[in-house]
Length: 382
Ligand code: SF4
Ligand code: SF4
Image (cartoon, protein in one colour):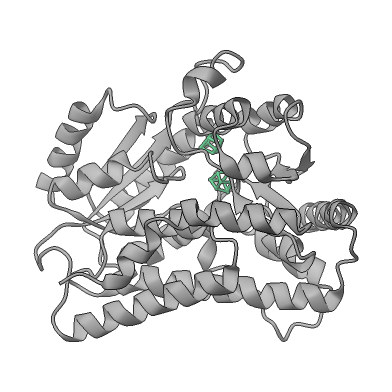
């Protein structure tokens, strides 16, 4: 017994290339993004299509290394490599890349990427604290709105922004409902399926259809659960993966944990739980741009200093999902997540008394066997 809806997510990325091409032929603008900090509501309110850009596979990294240093995060090299080799159809079709000054490697890479495609870089404050940070980010959101309006030749109205806020709230509600299925014990969906679904759905050009697909899947799994459906056993170790983003092609740690008998029931990652709990109150009648600035500034990413919100989120996920062990994933040369791992370990081992493993790796398969041994050792401690 397996949820039939799961298969409908298999080819979303491929199917939507055709939708994007057709929309472009009708004059619709396509705006690409790499990072969660972009307020997607601005793009939706302008009638443009926001698309995630490819960045999670190893294939284009060799081409990227002809320009970028080898000792750089694989996510940055993969992003640039796809752009330089024109192998990401979404990058190919996008009219503009909206980027942010998150980590040093990314913001410097964007300077070079501008030779391939127009890139607008939003200046992200390094802290979530204080009025000055919010004022600066609010100003950046306003500038981004003007850039998008110029590109699309439309005025982004307050009404359109409020409708887009409602849509993104719905997307987050639907994704959170999916992730929350695994509050059940035994789990109801594997970590590998969660990676596949959250990656594929980010490419969907019609966001209301994406919400409907997620709602149907959740409803089907709930119905199956009532008939005894589950993933893994009552005794399967319940693992939480936290850290740098994971997608199709860079899911090796999630795959290994599940091959070793665990179920990755929760992920504190950018394409999982990290952004979905951020919600805008639709009854709040203040300036929608300010509401967007407040929301996105609170993403608990390690590029923020301090980043206490990540520890609060982690602690609540570990309790709510009845986690047995935590894997903290850092892509090689990602200094912010690497340093922050010390604080994650303190929380997980010292405060919560759980087994903890910090993994620093890249997109290659060179260290698979070494990682397998370390993950097996972690699970033996459960
Ligand atoms: S981890 Fe941080 S920098 Fe990376 S995509 Fe998420 S918010 Fe952006
Ligand atoms: S994983 Fe780290 S180094 Fe890589 S893009 Fe994200 S924040 Fe930057």
